[in-house]
Image (tube, rainbow, N blue to C red):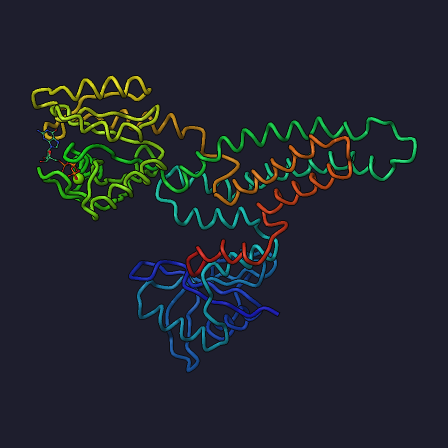
Length: 446
Ligand SMILES: Nc1nc2c(ncn2[C@@H]2O[C@H](COP(=O)(O)OP(=O)(O)OP(=O)(O)O)[C@@H](O)[C@H]2O)c(=O)[nH]1
Ligand SMILES: [Mg+2]
């Protein structure tokens, strides 16, 4: 028997309306205690909420969702009260007195999952939707919440079950006069799914880039203007800018929205060989962050002639943006040398100046780079590392099954393992520890 849980579902603080939620077998008796009677199902009804001593607490909108037609699948109620701390506290006290306990983070959605209202992928989408900062993140999460991701996995799963039927027939009726080519018939569907999974895996990185933010690293020699660029991008003096080389040591991250996408930009230490331990650690962290970033803005002091730009060259990748900065100063030899190296690598080269506003035109190339990398990625088959890992597992098993079709028993076992991996994405097969991990990231009241 489950207990009855209760939580504030809206953000704490002053607001026009606050929503309090209840779920569980005791929801009905709570409404009877504080709202006199239970309203008609799914009809917004105005009621005076009262404390146990009969004192009026608020004039509220009360909603009643009897099981199983509710978010959690249990008896649920919502109280839309005036959003002041005094009202919320008083109503909370009255509700708790009537029996329920406070909900843990994500507990409503966990109950919805356990009662078959949502797949695990959809429960994850609920959390993503609440966390979404950009519209692209929200679109991706809504699509997943509506079941699009689960449907794709279900399609693959059922095609695998078809393939498994051939393999099992070959095992079960090995001694009877079944056509000899029954196991190889599993090959067609298996190859088809394998190709689909390859496409999905290639797209998985983009799904994560939308969900977690597209990571942009600003790299370059000390004093080249990295912090100046960082401040210009984030629109405030977030990092210290000085003429002294080696000013920035820590990796400083900031999140911004660009063309509907969430972008995480990082300023970091200038790359150079140094024996100074703090700076050396900064350089190590900068290299690590930059090499796992989705894009690098490689900034070069075009007026310099000391060759310091070379330190960043090994980190640069095709498609990165190389920015020849300080175009307002007379050109040194470094600008041209760096431009040649970057061009040879397949990086795009732009000349800018961060102190003359007219030269600062990096927003446009950055936006088109984002569009190129992320467009069409809003509905990928994997939006979390968890999905990607399971896709990879399934792919491995299918490819083994394909190689071993002459031994249908082993191929059948591999196919079963692939089915299991895909079923884990929606939680059709799952273990407690995965559930605990997924729901731990939720906020209370959801
Ligand atoms: N003339 C000129 N100076 C610039 C330009 N961009 C940055 N600077 C100056 O160059 C100096 C270094 O700039 P920062 O942005 O601190 O450089 P950094 O790459 O972050 O330096 P470190 O953190 O030490 O690695 C500062 O004095 C800036 O004002 C530019 O386009 N033209
Ligand atoms: Mg700096």
